Amino acid sequence: MEGFVSGLLAGYGIAVPVGAVSILIMTIGMRSGFRTGFMAGAGAATADLIYATAASLGGAALVALLTPVSLYLRVAGGIVLVALAAYGTVRGFMPHAEGRTEPARGPFGTYAQLLGITLINPLTVVYFTALVLGRDGAAASSTLDRVLFVPGAALASLSWQTLLAAAGSLLHARLPEAVRKGATVVGNLIIAGLGIRIIALALS
Image 1 (cartoon, one colour):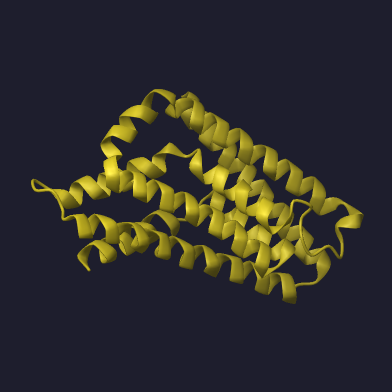
Image 2 (spheres, helix red, strand yellow):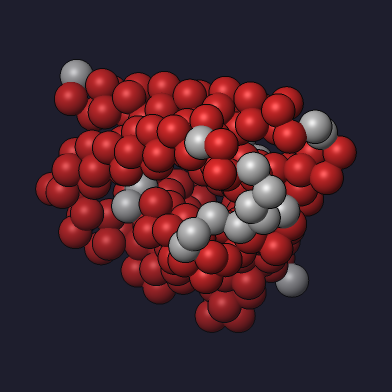
């Protein structure tokens, strides 16, 4: 069970710090309700699952593969976040957005969107690889530990993302429409700021 516990800790370690993806999941939950917010969180958790698996199977080799293109991935991620924030902000001011319960892309489109956004962050695989290699130490960990590490990380990530979606959906149900729209715009502006920061740090 040591591998599973290590995976849980790793999953919470990457998911809990507040970042653009966390704010985006809460914003989607607040705008569109729990089902779509949950699918957004599931998309992010799936990306963590993929990277945890990659790190457990051969993370060092994958890091070496991604390093030459990490700059482009980070810039692309920042651009995507800014574009999504612009779309969300404009949509928040649109009168016909009132009364809608889901974005036009639907829950599964939202899942794919968050999966893609999280996947283009190479820092995730670097994080998981550092944990896997650090846990191994001088001796290789058992195959069972490596296998259990992956579901532990995925479960932790999914549980946290679900909590964010639930928090957003509670606001969706309780806040007046005008306040909810204002909060959605503020959330998107924060996402845009984080996207710009990612681009600036990548290019500096």
